[in-house]
Image (tube, rainbow, N blue to C red; front, side):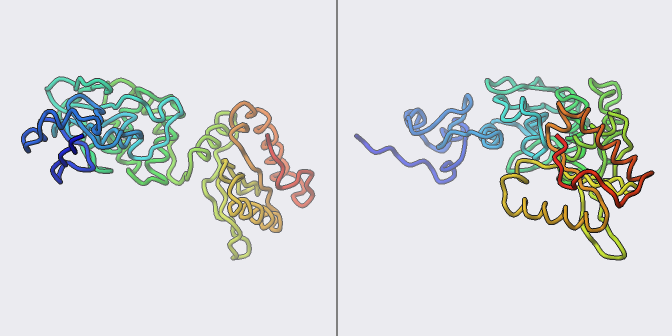
Length: 314
């Protein structure tokens, strides 16, 4: 069997357009060889792309300068938390900015936007809509609470945008689809959240009539730092920690959680641990217990407690 001719250096270990390869002297027969995959029409790659980011890089050579990855595709590349139904979405979302028609390529969803309404940025080697514009586009695909989680991430632990930038982007889309949802989300996005679980816990508490807790509160007693807790009702000395699977499966994290709980107990604070079940199907029971703790902390003898600090409120 005749050895396959090596591709030009610029085309190795990357995705490329068939047209570009032909211009470099690569034969059609070589481009049809079985060692190259065809992730999209008119594209060849040495390896099959699997993740959203890899598929976006595979398609990128086909995109003109007026086209950017957008919606949940841009969100995934930026690291914005998405609900499971959108994780690893098989089709890539691409927005054409300006008068030309939307992209029509198998495996993609094409959108159009007026010139000046969507800004482009570069991340992970591809062009995509700016963080604030991505947030606006997500309103057509996410629920209100999912949109708040995305906004908290952007202005919080990801740091891709400021709250003012989100507000400005929404103001520019007056009359667009989902603008009412966007305005409602802006009212509840908070700077300081550090995980989707923290955001969902805060929303669950507020939705069920409890006051809004402080985020990532530093407990300081007599000038000594004791711990930083996810959420806190400071006056009642009640701390809430959201426990993801990492807290259960990582020994180091688990040990830190136990130590934090003991340190808080030493300075007369309750520590309540919340799980996904507590802010989901068990939210009524969770809120009921928290309400009782808050009442006791504010009005009762704070040094006589009937609940252990590490109780599972689930």
